Image (cartoon, rainbow, N blue to C red; front, side):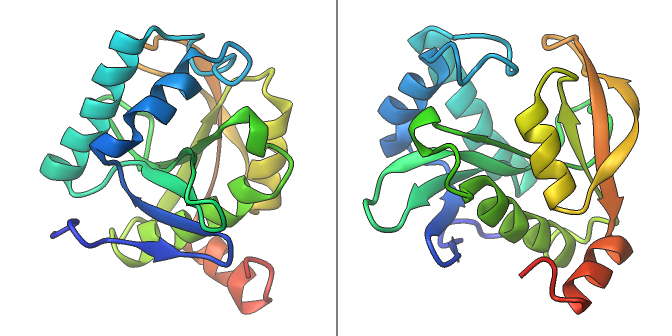
Length: 184
């Protein structure tokens, strides 16, 4: 799949594969302890660089990874979200993480909705999961807003190596919500 020109637009966001120009904002995001509370803790710039390169490599070799989230009005990088399935992962995930300054604006819901559509329609996934720390009430609320429900407990593979709640839904459940106009 050629991802070079991939761009998904919502009313307020642009989702596109990560780019080197995202690095400074990405590194600031990963250094923020509050934002990274449920994502392994604050990370130094060198680790952030490796994470960005991992995401870029996944796009290149796997044909998908999390998107960079760009706020249309400002052109500012405000997070990453989308499909993610490293080796040993408990399923086909659409995850999200938005910079703290953009919390509470509905960007997670808006971007995740577009990413789930893309994952089902383009990647052909039959299920989407979200791996969520039990203490992360905001992400559980977002998962519920998207129509996902708690499925089971699971464990993320090393180097993450933590227990998580696994939320999710099938393609059929997602499409049924669209038919009712819930996901739009």
